[in-house]
Length: 351
Ligand code: XIL
Image (cartoon, rainbow, N blue to C red; front, side, top):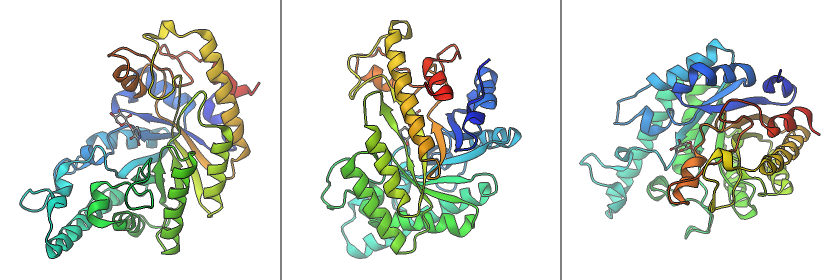
């Protein structure tokens, strides 16, 4: 029988999976218990789910994941306190319901900024106070760096958070999390494409500046939505080493290895269409990647997959979107029938 993945990597880092609450039962739950010692919510801890209306907190779904983790001795990651996506619009509306970004009067703009920072403080405080004894690693802010070169010249994503507060929203989020979470909470800045030099360096400069100002950042979360042929191992290694050189921890927070380039076109229409050779290539990729993670294991404390088996992956939405509504991706170690794939054996055994 197949060895337990988390046991295989016990000496190096914890192994996590992103889940929806319905996966806490049945076959998915069995997989979680057998192969993973860490867990994160795929969606239910995001602002739109946790505080859909101002002052109305909904912890029911998030609690299910936290309770499952506690019953099964798993670590918990929180994803994510502050993000520009899956965010309810009330955050950015003034007391009259008008979009705050439209305000031109400087005094009112200042008041709006304060209102938004107060809302961040309330959101973060309420959640951190609830889960601080259970959740170890926190994605405090998600995707604050742009992929390109926006007008601010520093690569900062010009979200509504940024337009209204500059980088103060990031500072307030981290400071509030630390203030109410205390020493035990580990605070991460999380992003994708952290291997791409330009984006990586923009993230580095931001983090360095914040650390110099005393902002309590403990680590960088590398989402790692990668592909069989991209990015290079060298890019991954360089990025982890770069952030470690600041004294920071690294976590691999949303790992999946897509079969496709970007955009995913053409994509296989169904799982049965995917040639065995593709799964072998994917296995080689996983093999090399986990060898690298093991080599760097003093700089990486957790590796989390953005799902469990190929029967449930957000990448299917993308494959469908770019292929006229049909398309199947297969980024994980287990197939849709919960059977191990070549990629699983590759990272258990390292050929
Ligand atoms: C994705 C979820 O997997 C989807 O179910 C949802 O529809 C959209 O969000 N980066 C992140 C994650 O930080 O929160 C995203 O999760 C995937 C990309």
